Length: 181
Figure 1 (cartoon, helix red, strand yellow):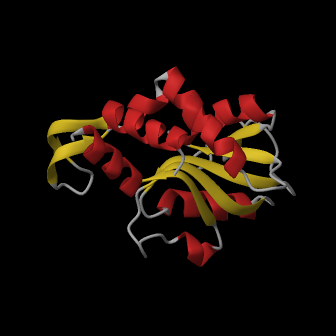
Figure 2: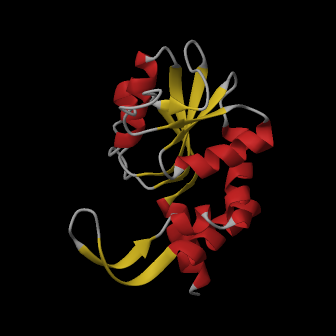
């Protein structure tokens, strides 16, 4: 890992790893919580994450697909840095108005690279990739800020979506360990 990525990992970890008592989505209680919205709401950290994503974008990317909710600010920043158009991908299509799944542009026939904040198993990415493919998009990759999936936990290979990450949970854990020394 480069010195810039190590510094980014330290800064994200310091900003987002919270100590206390937290009930997780699973219902389990934990003394630690990672609040990803803290880096997404920090303009300097958000920009650094987006800048780290730019060189990871697959060749031929025509559209960035920011996943609701966390992928939207990152996709917007990456779009600003690259000039690539962005669409904002809902968890499900609206049932009113335009009834769109992807807001902001057309995906039919376009190579869409999904943008996500944190991936654990890839369920939301899988659903978005399938739904966008049904609308004519070519989706084969997701670029995420943090891949916290354990080896073998990702369901994305089964739907032929490559995960490309800026950082992993191991990178954040190493940053936390080096900060506490």
